[in-house]
Structure formats: C-alpha cells, structure tokens
Image 1 (cartoon, rainbow, N blue to C red):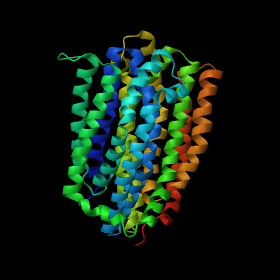
Image 2: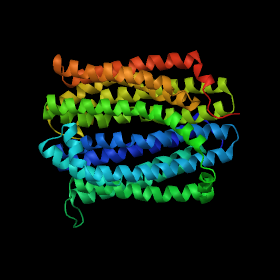
Image 3: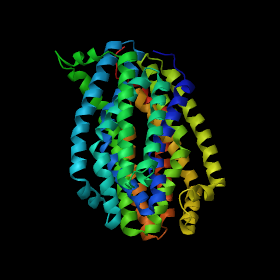
Image 4: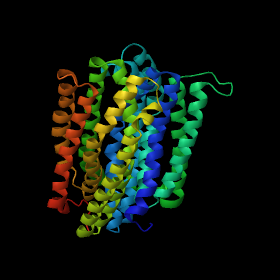
Amino acid sequence: MKKMTLFNLAWPIFVETALFMALGFVDVFVMSQYDDLAASSVQTANQAVSICTLVFTVLSGASAVLISQSLGAKKREEASKIAALSILFNLVLGVLISVVLAVFSRPILSFIGARGQVLEFASDYLTIVGGFLFTQGLLGALSVIIRNHGYTKRSMYVTVTMNIINTALDVIFVLGLFGMPSLGVKGAAIATSISRIVGIIVLLIIVFTTIEKPSIFKLLVKPFPFKELWLLLKVGVPSAFESFNYNISQLVVTSIVLNCLTETELITKTYISNITTFFYIFSISIGQASQILTGHFCGARKYDEAYRSGIKAFRSALIIAMCLELIGIIFRYQLVGIFTDNSEVIEMGATLIILNIFVEIGRTINLTIINSLRGAGDVFFPTGAAIFSMWLLSTLGSYLLAVVFGLGLNGLWIAFAADECFRGALMLWRWKKGKWRSKTLVAS
C-alpha cells in the first residue's frame, strides 16, 4: 500500500472525476450539435440512471469506509473480504437493475414527466445505457478498492482511456462520421456503454494483478461473512439514502421544470447543470481523498490527525471552488455560448452562473465535511440533515420560488443555495463538536 497525503490522493481523483464528468458533458455537447431537445432528453434520462446507481452506492461507498479503516487498523484480510463482497453484490444487483431499466424505460420516463419528442429521445438512450448499467456498479466497486489502497493514479489512467473512447465513438456514432449512419441519442448511449465495458476490463486486471488475488472470493464461503455484510449495510444504507434523497428531490425539480416551466428554461437548466459541475470537481476529489485519509486515521485511532485533515480539506476546496466560480462568472456568456447561440438561453444561463456562487459555498462544505464524517463512520447525522433540508428548502423551495412566485430558474437556484448552505453549516458544527470520534467501525 502506498504512502498517502491529501494532495497525492486528491489530484488523480480530481483528474479522474473531471474526465468522468466529461463523459456526460461530451454526450450533452455532441447531442447539442445534433438537436437541443435531444441534449435535454439525455439529461432527463440520466436523472433516472442516477437514482438507480444509488443501489451501487450502498455497497461501494460503504466498502470505501470499511476498507480504509481496516487498512488503518492493519487488518489486511478484513479489507480483502469487504472488497470481494462489494464486487459480488454490485454485479448481482447491477444485472437486476439493468433488466428493469431496459424493459421499463418508457414508463419510468413518463412517470418523471417526459412527453413527446423528449420521451422518444430519452427512451432510446435509457434503454441502452440502462441495459448496461451493471457496468457502472462494477466500475464503482473496483475503483474504490484501487483508491483506498493508494493507487489513485491507476484509476485515473483508466478513466482517461474511457474518456478518449467515449469521445471518439460519440462523434462517430451521433453525427455519423466515417461512413457510419447518424444514430443520434442511440449513438451516445452505445458510446457510453462501450467505454464503460473497456474500463471494467482494465480495472479488473489492475485489481487482480496488483492489489488482490481472485481467491479473495473464497473468503465469502464457509462461513459467509454476515457480520461484514451487516457493516456494509449499516454504513451504506444511510449514506445511499442521503444520495437517494438528493436524486429524488432533483427528479422532482426536473418534473417541475418539465411541467411548469418553458422548453427554453429546460434547455437552459440542462446546459448550466453541465457547466457548473466543473466548478466543484476539485471539491469532490478533495472530499473523496479526505474520506480515505479519515478512514485510515480513525482505523489507527489518530483522531486529532483526522480532524486536522478534514479542516485542511475543506479550506483547500473552498479556495479552489471560489476561484473557479469567479472565472466562470467572468466568462459566463462564452461558457453558455459553447452549447447554443440562442440569446435567451445565453442570457438566462449567464444570470444563473452568478447566482451559483452561493450554491458552491454550501456545496463545498458538504462535499468535503460529509465525506470526512463518512470516513469516520458517522453516517446518520448527514442523512437526517439531508432529509429535512433537501425536501423543505431545495424541493419545496424550488416550487414556491420558481412557480408560485414566478422567479423561474432563478428561483430554483436560490432554493438550491439555501439547501446547500444550511446543511453545510450543520456539517461544520458536527465536525467541530467531534462526536464522530466515537463512530469508528473497525475494532483496533
């Protein structure tokens, strides 16, 4: 296992996260050259995909905590057992979810609120991407194993490869280059699925030649590790429920946009949602690095070092996020103009980028401190705060401000900011109070 520091862990995770986000960004960008509604349809379909991938979060997210704490406590076999459980269950559940999405794509999208051409485009996309969603489960499980052993660079290289493959195939399949027919949204879905399959193959090679042996699956028999499975569920279910709440609330917000706002506002939200992801990618990577370090420190019972690491992660992420947001504000018209020349969309989008600075302040706290709390095994408090804040401030607030008070997309962003900042204040308070010090899951 390699020596770990916040910087050494965070920068490869940053590159990997940026490129992983770019997979979705490239899909939307290429689709915007094909058809604006097709781009929005891909975004709508991905809302349903995001909810289903939460099942994978239950195990892979929990395994990240337990593997890091086990390694910190010098319990190598325990870490291997957790890794085997995560791979097996993500595969089994992934196949089941893939079948459901492939068969019921249209009813699911209709339930969300997709209609007409948006429904047609989104259904084509979801049938293919959903049918191969088990690949996302395996990618998550394998990446967690690699990262928590300190090999974040190798996981990054795999994502680089996936990104190159996805981009090349996107352009060829969607726009119909080199004699290929123009496949539209189906082409984007095929490109995404192929790139993920390649990623899985490479990650499997890395895991079973560098970190583990295929024989780790023998640790799951005689007897079956029910204790470890219970720990996975104990950590994973609350963490996943927090993400589930977020994705369901965002699904409701998308439904509000589809049913209550204009087509132009739907297109604008799609483009701004993609642009703003690049404002917080450093926060995501630093937060994930902080979770790994916190898990190792707590497993070794070095709580003061864990505390300082969490605060350092938060401060570093906030400085970087604010710098990126300010750059985004300066070039806001040009950023929206990458996707469209519609002046109304550009004007609305430019205003949202300004409002987004308040979203990023709260989001940065949540992405770093919540991950640190998870690394320590403190998962219930963030989930409770999320249930209250996401539904009251983000979802209900979005409807009241956007529809009832007629603020449109500006109302959505004000509600998002209120939710993120309120939860962020609670998370900082929790971290400084130190109750997470008693939540370590792995015995010393």
